[in-house]
Amino acid sequence: MKRINLALQGGGAHGAFTWGVLDVLLQDEDIEIAGITGTSAGAMNGAALKAGLLQGGRAGARANLDWFWQQMGAAQVPGMDAWFASVPPGMVSRALEYSWPFMAADMMQRLTSPYAMGPLYEHPLRDIVDQFSFDQVCAEEGPKLFVCATNVRSGKARVFEGREISTDALLASACLPTLFKAVTVFDQTTGKTEAYWDGGYTGNPSLWPLYRQDLPEDVVIVNINPLRRDTLPVTPQQISNRINEISFNASLLSELRAVAFVQKLIAQGALSREEKREVKVHMIADDALMNRLSVATKSWPVTSVLLHLKEAGQAAAKGFLSAHKADLNARGTVDLAEMYG
Image (cartoon, rainbow, N blue to C red; front, top):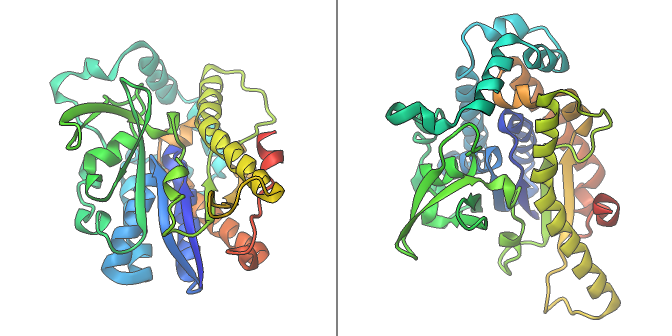
């Protein structure tokens, strides 16, 4: 049995790529998912996986992930998918990005605040997230789940786990401040109510919760924010999107730099494995696909694009297992120095 941890990035509707990756991993009886850390869409995927796993095993987890992303697709603009059903995702992304509705919505986002919506404001994902089975999401059994958010006032990462995970914690992890009001969560340990934004600003996702002795050393990162874009962003939307990608990857790269430093010290004998864990890092990604997409397909969940992303995630996971399944629990498969250098 290969025991692994999962680190699931956020990226809006592009989290459907992770849906496909998880679908393949769950079908492999040789793989046990011991821990999950997730941000935004990654946190949603992790919660859906854990609840489904405890309710109905691997098939239950796959079904629950299917349900969640079907709900996300149902939230699209009526009739939109009929236009895009036979169009490649890259063309859908460009069509949306240069459409008048998207540009008008983007302009309004830059000129107004979500607080201008007044007392009738409601987070658009609340009705979906409320349907999660939180008895299972928060249970001691099954994979350990960690949900990352950013404390607005302190600017520090906040990781929710166990009974701390709630609808509000998941929505906080996915709260982009230009789109949604900050999500407030009462902290029983401090007795204070704190406001949170998207966890991507401080941990996308945070890896350190996985460094526990009861969890395996292998961390499989599902990356959905491209580390590199060869095309120079020139439009306001492209520039804003690339800024977000860079900032959302920065915290992850910082943690990976620390992992590489510890690995070097262990290899040199300056640290023992009893003092620090020798984390084995793996990554599943499809940067080529993500380079063809944009902020438009992150924020507008078109069903045909979600399904294409799922298929791409499935293909990437199958490719990873074919090439590196034997490496799990044996060695890392990511050149960390090249990644952050």
